[in-house]
Length: 480
Image 1 (cartoon, one colour):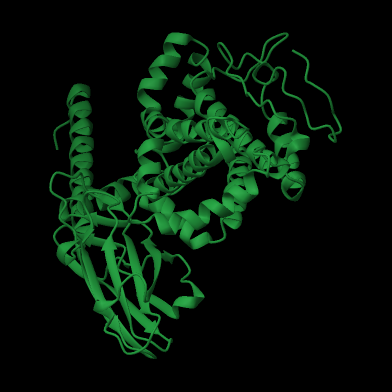
Image 2: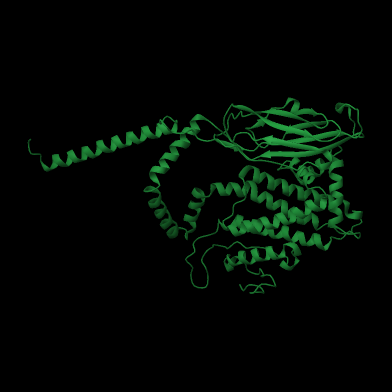
């Protein structure tokens, strides 16, 4: 065999490396392709699990039970499969269940004739209702997830022997409720291929590429985040999803909470509003609008996400305490929830008042308003001390939401400099005016503990003038 020159040997080695890498790349590409289409022998099919179903609790007087067969959580665009309801009537009279679709998005819908589907259930018997699910997703980027929401009305007679279809408002009882599912995912064969391919690439790269890439990104972030122009670059590349979340959900929720405080402040003796009827009605509707906005966030995004998990816990404790007491005082948690869900997330307060107290459903909202009014104001048209304490919960939740929405846009680094943490340019402020001692006694211990921990985790320049609770070890107002 002839002796090769140094240059020839070098090119030979390079050619072998190139051929080897080409063969490896081709093999990986074939493997990814086969895996993405499920063509590898012995590869088990991906499991499709049922989703969760939640519903408002039917009133005991209605003698109604509804069981829902959960649909599959993943389906292809154009597939159809019914939402099956099993209805049990254990009362002494026949009843009529009328179900209608509540639009939660533009892709997954329930196919109902004339907007509703109905079934008659005889006394002490069961019946089933299957409503087809339409997954027409033209113009929607797949995969796409959204929940199913179904509102129903249950009508039963007050006297025996009458046809259900012939009931009038005087001889029939009507009960309402809501059924909703966790988000269903509509996908396509192409979207599934890309998803499987991404999984394979991630498996191949995570042990080599991701650690190096994350280390480089972490080093660059520490070196560059202190510069305002570079911070703007990070904002444009890494935070678009958070910006959308703030603009679409957090700011509207904060505005709804602010309106509650404004309207509640008008509950006072006034010649223009004897008995505070108008102010109480507006505050009642403002609270339901806030609840609708929260429900819209949960049904589309699955929850609320802050930079701090402690902030999430404090926010939920305040919102749950405030709205839970509101539901309790209205006299019917399920009816209260049904009214809130019936509102459009983007409607104004005036539109909500018009809808909730229109002639068609006014009889359902009036008893709830009476219970709320008895709780919120006294005989002299002044706010009660208990209602004032729960308004403090609403204000604290709003302060946390506003601060968490702003802080991420101002943060620079955590290295610290003399006489300051050097975390922020123009530090955002946590603004909470009420004294923590005004928090309801039932929730005070939990809220106070979370609030103290939350303040401990916020730089001092962001909490100027905010006082620790009087029973805290630190006590007093923080220095500037």
